[in-house]
Length: 163
Image (cartoon, rainbow, N blue to C red; front, side):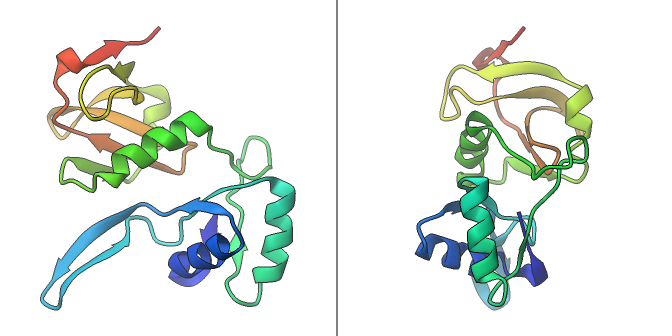
């Protein structure tokens, strides 16, 4: 979903207060004033609930923090991320390491790259595509054309090609 005017953290707080599971990918930002965690993609919040329950919550929250569905252009319905994809994405983004690159154009992943699964190490079980980005092989995870991330530093012997 989209939270208007960079109010994704406020939306997350309000949703969690009513028992809705949600997630915002964050990263550590350093400046002269210190360090703080900020959203990687402004206005983006992943919400895990039924469409009916979300419709009711949206109506109640509209005046405090308007939320907008992200629409799948092929179906005209709100976008849905499969549980396995979301779990993999959350595992990888929770690391908040410098080995993660957020891609500007997530649609490239749909048509390119070899499908793989990481079989060893901290990301064991994560599935993605193997692509060459910035002269380096990276494992790329994509969520429904919304966002894509590339992980570097994964040895090739940790990857198994999927059919």
